[in-house]
Length: 342
Image 1 (cartoon, one colour):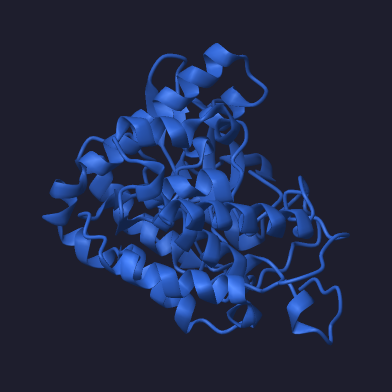
Image 2 (cartoon, rainbow, N blue to C red):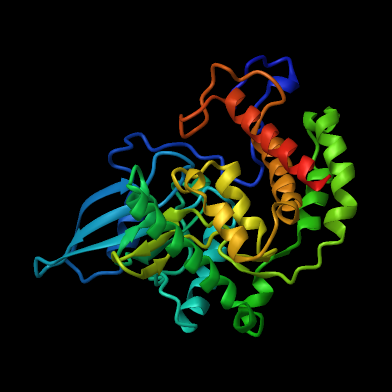
């Protein structure tokens, strides 16, 4: 936990309660424990060897570890040791992936049962997944020219539409009972129930009071969502989508609220390229209609991730802005949303 002043709760950066208390391995360049190595090799013939292993990212850990294996015949394979910092995320993904595959969505195959490494229980459950073909749209679009940004936006929006289109089939599947159903009102009520210093801020409480009747009136049917429309979770081959990854937050939710993360998380470069505006136009949804969803996500972000004050000299985990800048950005988004609500 980072603190500007340990005696002042207003300057304390919140610690999420729904993630694992993770401790890094002694050598981040060699992240696998003997138990994990044995789990990976159990997928392959006797005599296979692990060539390399690396974390897919160095933030929001524990996270996926990419592993390369050489087989007895000399061929090489790649798999993913799937972990997630969110408690219950791996378990949820392992349940939904087979159902999505049955419906024809190109998703990873779960190669092992869910297990916990007894030497690293704080890392939570893990599975082994295969690696899908294709490049992710985040890497493709990063600092890309405008035509590439246009293609990336089109493919992400097509991918979101494909996920939503699975709703009716998934509702009839037994897996539906294992996925949460979350309305915008549910999210707002969770904000109200959760303690913290933001509930002493007039900006925050005024927004809640104004939003309650508006959000209560939203009756848009829920749709299936991966819970994370980050462009890095959509793979393509240069022309079309080849894979969908990361279903640790899979749920049935409001069809529009997921796009708010492009602004609250500042998912560069598509957030600056106009993907939210493009989505609203295609859905024939005005910004005023989107604004309550955006406001709820702003409140959620402030309460769970940002101190009420301070943080000028502390960078967020991705190190692209300070916590103070993060707070200003989300507060500005909240004010913009509330102004649009009228």
